[in-house]
Length: 139
Image 1: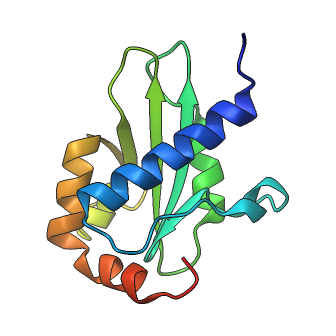
Image 2 (image 1 turned 90 degrees about the vertical axis):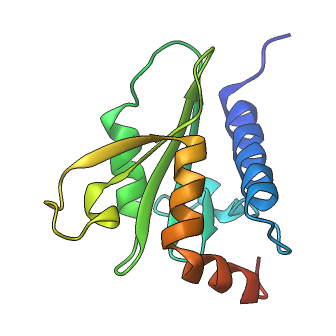
């Protein structure tokens, strides 16, 4: 039985939320933003100041430019963009701006991290966002 793309996308969003909750030992779950199906410029998930767009796709190895534009458009001022993507038989990767890691780098350079590396970045450099998430009653 074929699975439609909306269901596949929602399942991947839930999977990423669960992976974040487990890896970061979060008490509050990382829930899908259900309004994003009706409102164009909302991310799939939020973790503190991070706006997360999740894309699960069959064939391929590189994310589409439109995917990156989607998460950038959903990211507000003083927030961070992350495109989390996975293709069949490929590891989960995360695209972020290099300037998020080092403010000395040009603002338009993007870097792709393996999922586990992104988790290390969150744990080591973005504890504030984990605390924001844990203290938020609307998760």
